[in-house]
Structure formats: C-alpha cells, structure tokens
Length: 112
Image (cartoon, one colour):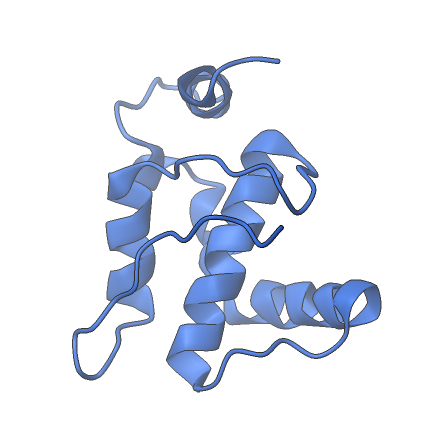
C-alpha cells in the first residue's frame, strides 16, 4: 500500500500545470468543499452507517469534508485504518466550515 504522502502526491501529480499544495488542486473544491457534494456524501454515509452523530451544521460539514478527502485520495479504508490528512487541507476545510468558538478536536483513534 502506498504511503500517505504518496497518495496525496499522486493526486497533486494529476494537475497541469503542476501545483505545490493540495489546496490548489482543482478537484478539492468540487469534491470536498462543495455543499452539494457533501449533501450527497451525507446520503451515502446514512445509507451505509445510519445517521451521522455529529451535531451542528459546520461540524457535520467538516466531518464529511475530511471523510470525502480521505476517500478521494485513498479510497475505502475501513473503520480501523486511519491516515493523516495534510495540515494545509485541514486548515482549508476549517476555513470553509469554521467552528464558531474556534474549538477543534483534531483526529481521534478509531473505535475498536
């Protein structure tokens, strides 16, 4: 399995002209930040796992944006496998869907 950096680098390598940061990828906005794409991701999540137990619109959007980014770069990982999302992407998602109190949890280990 490719490393985490290799998966993101592969996505970056798809662009012409070349880019230096994943946040500049032309696919990031339509795949991970577009509210309609996230609504669709919510429907898929609900069909697979049931209701998303995340309260608050912005928090739910952040959660779905992170999941969608992971799916876009790595595909399906399962419940127990986690990857590190580049900090530039995390910051971009947080700017798009900010927490009103500025309180962010960060990643958590998977549930066993």
